[in-house]
Each structure stands twice: as structure tokens, then as C-alpha cells.
Length: 523
Image (cartoon, rainbow, N blue to C red; front, side, top):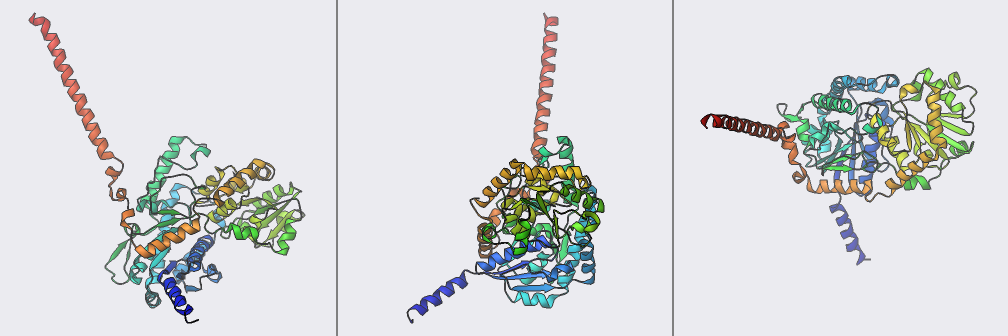
């Protein structure tokens, strides 16, 4: 025993040396966003690191939900009355079912989100005693989402030497541009599926990028907690991140040029191995056995089915009624189902569903969803044909991203009132085997990708905690001016040279013509 004890002590010391103290900053703004960051925290905790999850509340209802299983050090912070009122406004999402989205809304959306991050900055700066307790933990690494740039003054105040950015969406152009990643207006993902002239698409894409550049979702700068006269410029400081973890997967997303700092970890929250060996509860087991086929309908935790118009509810129920051999499991959050689905036997309503477990069950035939990235990753990894009905935001891009793999049908939310269109979409994914084959092929690609997202995230996070800032990964293109980046200086020089050449040829031709005209007179 005396011989073994020194080795055990040495093993413990080695473990302590290789573990890092990490702070994950996760404002409670959206369910999927919080689930994603909770998963990142748990992966780091599972690897033996000391992880603290800091969760300032924006939307009040998320405070009572636990987003981690392994990470126990979770610090909450209540919102100010102003921030709570903003959160209540965000939570009222029923309007999105009918609301149109256009590029003209970008300035308004930017100003609104600036008010969110600006007020969150005020809440943090007014809770310095809590921040002082965090400072004593001497963190090695800070992880936060790029849209919450109010975390940048917090990093300085806590004296954390390194930080990484994580994104719960596939692509956020402002922060990626700040990192030096090329954002090309000439390339529009999914343009081959849009029935609009290419030149118009390029014009719209350029207009959107210009608007997003000038109407940024982050304030231009924040004031330091220590020195009110010191300004921290958000986009400039963001480029100091060691890495940016994007919720994108190269085997699922549109191909594009990325920088070395961009570490793609899309699908990291989907544990396919445990889901496939797990057993579903007795109630849901009975529901799945009711008919030969089962079809899941869920629009996420933010956009609720109960808030859609009555016309949409009637249309969906009417379409489901046409499939007598299919049990439709509809996540519906109210008790008024008799008003639009009375007497329809093949619909099972539930206010809550085990979505991942149902998608992993072979008895489930297909899935209809809003195109939130969490649901897109789950249905992609678990290989189910699906109907995408995007409602807002990045869901439009997500739907086209998945549809290009041929296992998905996309319909507009405005088509939900037409039961024939809905019925046709259902019929395709239920009975056309080409959709099932394509969905399973995509799932095989994702499950057998050479480098797993979990491993990639863990190793890059540990690398950042160990080495801090990585200026060698900072592309020189980020330091270029507008004219230099787009080769306008070279174009100007080329035009000048061509002009001089043309001018020289003109004078040479003029001299030659004069010479040949004067020659006969001399003779």
C-alpha cells in the first residue's frame, strides 16, 4: 500500500496540471441557445476541467430550467426591470406566424438587439460584488456567444487571459467578418433552389450584407467597468478570440471558405449512440404502436403551435385526417384541440414530447419542424425524412441547407392554410422512399465523419486555455482596407496602364498616318 500511494498522488497531480478553470457565459435568451452552451459546459466538465456556467437571465421563464447534467457550478443573475420587459417582449412570439421578414427590418432588429446587449452590460456593471467573486476563481478561458459582445468588458474585469467565441447558429456574418473570414456577396447559399434571377439575388445579398455591416447587432463600443473613460470596441476586440466554434457541420452546411480560427462543431449536442440504445417510455411506446407509421410535428420551444392562426390549425388537421395509417404526434401547448380537430382519430396531442428519443425510434416515419438548428441537427443525425416550415431568422437558411440533401421538403409558413399543399408535402416524405434513403445517407455521413465535433471542440478549447491568444491565426486580410481587399487599387493601376497604352497607340497611329500622308506630297 505504501508503494502504491506515491503513484496515486502523482496521478492526481498530473490530472490537476492538465485541467483548466473555464467560465462559460450563457445569457438565458433562447432555449436552443442555452441547451447548446449547457452541452459545451458538460463536455468540458466530463473531461475533468473546472467549469462555471454564468447565466444572466433575459427571458424569465428559462431560469427554472436546468441546461446542464454534469456541470454543477451554475451562477444565476436576475434581470433588471428594463431587461425583464425586453425579455417579455421577445417571449411573445405568436406574431411570427404571420409576420413578413424583409431587409428593411435589419436596422430595426439591430437597434433592438443593441438595446438587449446594452442593458445586459448595465446589469453586469451594477453587480460588481458578484463579479469580484468570479474574479477570485482565476479563470484560464472564457467562452461566450458572438452576439453577446457585452461579455468583452467582463473578460477584462475578470482578468481572463484567453477567450473563444461560440455560435449557436451556423453563420453570423458580422463576427465572422471581424475574424477575417471572407463573406462573398457573389455567392448565395441555396440559390439553385430559388426561382429569382441571379443578378437580383446578388443585389439583394449585397444589400443585406451592407445593411448588416452598418447596422450591427452589437453596440460600437462598451465602457470598461474599471475605467469609465476607456472604450472597448466590440468588433475590434472580437478578433482576439483564439477560436470561434460555429454550430455548423461541413457535411451538412453549404460549402464555403473559412479561416483557420473557425472550428465547426455542428451536431455536438446530438448523442446518437446513447439515443439509439435507449428505450422510450411506456406511454410513447404505445403511441408508436397504434398504426403502421408515425409522424412527429413540433415547432420548437419558442415558436408555439398554439399561437398559429386558427386557419392554419384547421388546415393541418384536415391534411392529417387523409392518412388513416399514420399516427400524427403533434406538440400542441393548449387544451383547445376540439375546436379544430374534433373527431380526428389519428392525431395524438401532447404539450411536451421527448423529441430526440422519438426521432431515434425506427417506428417514427417522418418529422415536421420549423427549421431551428437544434431540430435540424437532430433530424439530420438521426436520419428521418422531414418537412421544413421555417418561421423566422436563420430557419430559412437552415431549411434550404437541409433540403439540398434531398431528404427534406420545404414549405412556406403562408402555405399552412392550404391543406392540399400540406397533404402533398406529408405524402412525399411518408411514402416516397427516395426521401428516406437520402435522409439515412446523410445520417451515415454525419455519424462517420473523420473528426467528431465533440473531440474537435474539446481539444481546441484546451489548446486555447493553454496558449491563449493565437496571433499566428489572424489573417492579414483583416488588416486590409476596402480598396486593397477588393483589389480596387490594382484595378485602378490596370485601368491607368490600359489608358496610357491606348493613348500611346493613338498618338503612334496619328504620327504614322501623318507620315504616310506627307510622303506622296514630298515625292
